[in-house]
Length: 122
Image (cartoon, rainbow, N blue to C red; front, side, top):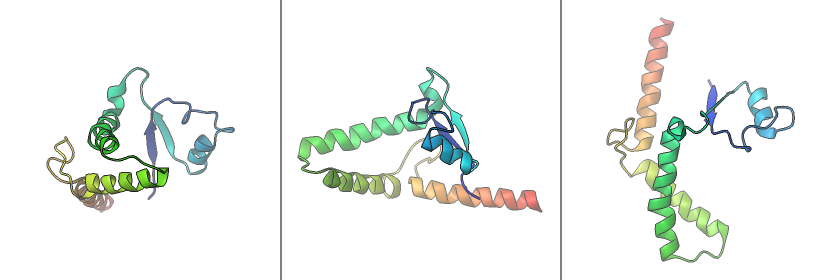
């Protein structure tokens, strides 16, 4: 089973007319529901908002004080390395992770989902 639904804000990057916008067309062709956050309610997308704050505080503000980048590729490599650290080494204290690393939370969630589906189908 693939992606069923995606949540985005109401930015113009995501909310064009279906027949004229590549993003909307892709979602329609792949039968992916497009849910949008409520207007003026950033808490609807709180996990993403918190991630933006974390990446700003822990990566960008630190990195740009330590290094001058001569190319986007160099910045992208350091960002990729930081994202690997964030997802595979750095523990998270949020509601879902509870002290685990995100990749372990994902694996545990997939196992729980599989168990639930198996029980429903039997």
